[in-house]
Structures are given as C-alpha cells and as structure tokens.
Length: 576
Image (cartoon, rainbow, N blue to C red; front, side, top):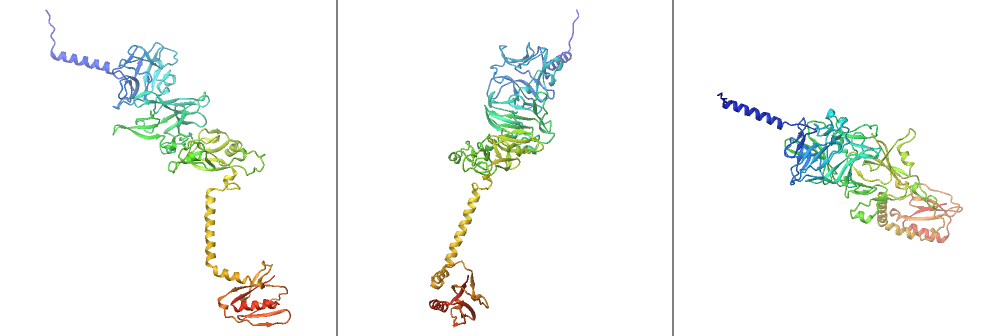
C-alpha cells in the first residue's frame, strides 16, 4: 500500500499560499461595478484608483440608519460628499447596490425593495459604474466605462450638499434651468433640508443661496474673474486657478468649474444644514477640516438686510442707512432697529412728476456716484451703441434707478427698486444712482450739512454783534445825544461825511444848506474855538489850529454849535 507522506513544511506552505490568494481575491480594492455584481452592506466598497474616495454604506453619528454614499477613503472620520438614498434610509444592515435589468444603478433594502435608483434614460442595459479619481460615480455602457462625455448618469450631475473641484455647476440662461445643492436636514440627518444653492441664470450670473423659496445670500455678479459681492476672492484667484465660467454650449447652457492650485489638497465646498456655505481644506497635521471662508459672514451679507433702497456697512453704527436721496419708509420702526421696511425717495424724479400740475417745476434728474458698493440684485445687462453711453441707456427709462459699468460684464442697469446693497471697506464697484435735481444743492431742499453750517455761522455772528454792542455802549450813548440836536436834524441823511479835523487844510464854498455831525474826541476837550465873521455868506470856524469854512447858520444854531465845540466835540460837515 502506497502511503502519501506530508511534511509539516509542505502543509504550512500550502496553507499560506491558499490564504494569500483568498485574501487577494476577496480584499482587492476595485473601483468598478458591472452588471451581475453587487456591493453589499457590511464591508463591500468601491475605492477610486488614487485611493482618495470610497463608496459604500455608512451611518451618521448617533444613528443606526444606513445610507449609500461617497466619502474620503483615508480620513478616519467619515465625511460624506454625496448620498444616494438620503430621503429613504435603510433601517437594517442588509442594503445592496447593484445594476438592475434596465441598466440603472439600484439600492435595495433587506427585502430586495428598491429604495433608490439612478433613473437614467439608457439605450443599452449592458452598463457598468466606476468611481473616478475626482469622486464622481459614473454610469455608462461597458464599452465607454468612465467616459463622462458618453455617460448615462453621474453623481456630479446629481449633487447633494457638497461641491468638489472638477464638478460642473451648470445653468442655462435661455430656459432658466439650474443645478442646485441642497443642505442636510440636520447635522446627523442627510435628508433634504431647508437650504439650497446654485447659479441664478438671470442677467449676469451669480451664486444664490435660498431658504426654501426666499433668498438668503448671494455672491454678487461674476465679472469674469471674481464674484463682485465677495471682493476678497481677488487675493486667492487668477486666470488659471479658482472659479471659471465656460463658454455657452449650442443649447445655451454654461457651467462654473473650480481649478485648485494644489491638486494634492483635499478641498470641498459645503452647504451646511443651518444655511452657510463653507470652503474647507483638510489639515493632515491636525487631522481636521480647516475653514477657509464662510458665507454669509455677517449681518450685512444676509440678503437685503437693510431693505429696499437701504445700504449696509459692517463697521458703521447703526449698520443700516438709507441711500443718499432716500428716507426711511417707517421712521419709528427704523429708529428701533427694524430696517426691513427699507427706504423711499425723498423727492420725486422729474420724469415721475405730473408736469401739468400748477407750480411744479425743477431741473433735470441727475446721477450721483457711490464707490465701493456691492451692486444691487436683479440687474439687466444691456448693449450700448457707439453713439450712446450706459448713462444714456438708464436715463431713457424713467423706471431705471441706477446703472454701473463693470469690467468683464459691461453696462448694467436696474429697473425698479435697489435691493441688497452693501458698502465695502475695500473692493466693490461704483454705482450711479438716479436722484432728483433738488438733491444736488439746487433750489430744492438743503442738505443737513448745509443747514447745520448756516446755523453755526449765524450763531457766531450774532454773538459777535452782541459783544461789540456791549463793548462800545459808551460811544453809542454820546452819538444818540448829539444826534438829538436840532441843528443836526435833516431829511437828507444819506449825504457823504467829511471829517474836517483829519485834514491839514479844508476849505469849501458851500452854497447850499449843510448838516453838521459831531463826535467826542478826548484830545479836543480843551480846544478853544473863535467865531469870526467872514465876508459874504461864509463864516470861519477855527479849532485846534484848523480852519473850517461853513455856511451861514441861524443864531440859535450857532450857539448850539459853539456849546458843542466847547464840550470837546470834533466837528464833521455833511454836504450834499
């Protein structure tokens, strides 16, 4: 009888080879799922070739519900960037991903009930799915596996709450279609939440965040380099890296994409469950996600925080004010800090007036420049001919309240209310706002600054006048007494005055009547005056060494004059 002897060494080598082969067969990481294969909950996953992304079943924190999703492979803390059955979780651990008879991807629960499907229109049921190096799950025919241009369905076209570099954020200005991201319902519930975010296709494109149907935040218009409402973007973007806008496709569709500066960085954008957009970068040293930027960052970035025709400035107190030429709609509420009511025009535009009404007039409307502004929402981009300007375009339409010329966009006009306006400390654009003629210092209402200036200057001169009156009150009393002399009364008070005491020689032939005005001078108090008779109709008056010729006076006038001279008064002659 032949005996087969097996040494212990042979047994060990055979067992080792069997285990290695079995391990390689069952544990080999794959990135592809073909028809007839399935990926079961309990350890089966797809891993991208670069080993950055992984697809499989997971549970959120403090939950036993199971979801099919994609996360980062080498980060210990599961960070989902896409979830398939977000609204239909599996309550046990018996979920399966497979390709159905229609060629679509399907998620089945433990009872083989479908809880999710790709629901693509597929020409051939011979399909396969692959997890790309950028985190995109692609379903295509087996012949075109991984070819995004011939894909039937892609997870990048059906995002949840996260945007990854390489994704296309599509929109179509022609038909208004847009692709949106939707937040989770809570930090541990991936089901559809209250917030969504995408590109508003109307006018110059911009990214908008909605809370249900209400706008919560917007990025400002794209100027071919940055989103104008996020001015700090200029420090971290250039013509190669950052967000880029594609040229229009034949059907009018366009898309934004993001080119990161360092391809080895793990970078993602996320719409949080509580309504914030975050840009996050993985910090390998600290093993956590670092926040690069977040929007909205402050109250002024909340949509239309100061109401229509209001403007918000972060570092001002209060933050809200009305645009120049506008006043609060409800002054009481505005002063209480409730700015939602916004502002209204202080003075009607000329084109808004009914000129047939009696007494209405005024100059033409004008435009005032406001720099460093986040441009209002709902702009219309218009083309401008060679013989006209953007200002002309706006002026031709009475409903046009503002315009702006922006590099990379062109002529923008705003027909209707100015909504969601912010004033930046740095950056921003120049906004030209239409105002009534009276707002420019014309015949209309004065500005507050002008009124204050007039009041201050007027008060100063009033105080100065009162001080001068008090200072020279003594001389004013003497002037009053002298003016009461009968010889000095005359109806011709507008005659010129000549001071005889200040001329070395003064002689004149006064053929007509004259008025005499006298003022006290201390140096003349001891002056002696001789009255002598001169020939003809003239009399000679001498005083302090000076001779003055005066007309004939009646005797009572002479006596009064002589008394005045002896009292120490200087003689002035007022002639016609």
